[in-house]
Length: 158
Image (tube, rainbow, N blue to C red; front, side):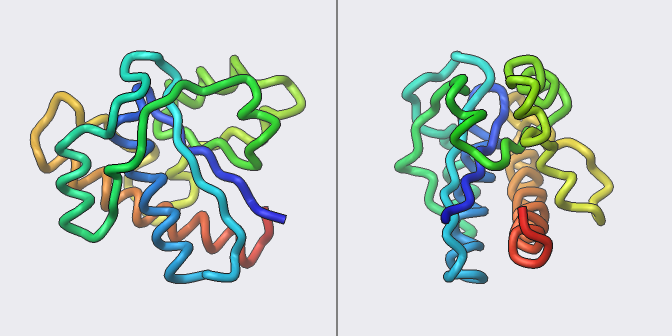
């Protein structure tokens, strides 16, 4: 049975699509036997149907990740039933997800960087209004936390 993970940020054009692509690619490389389904969504409806930010795509492509086929969508009520883990990029999105989640599904909502215990960060900063370094940082954090997610899924279960 497949494990389903949903990455969540505000607009679903920078952080969460990057995290989606990184987790999918690392899983395919590191644990090809793991049946993993990864998607991403935003808590807001600002960019519905749009591709990821061009800066996110450029930084990701430089490191071998393809975001070009992804399109922004908003979190749906059914996501709390469909996905085993909903990983928020920051505390504001975590709070929004907690408010949307049925009480019996709130345990599925976690911070993405909870899976990066060695990181000095607790949240993935939103790079949207900053320069290219912010997009690099998002990718660094996504790689670190994605490794932790894979470790958790393969060694400790879900």
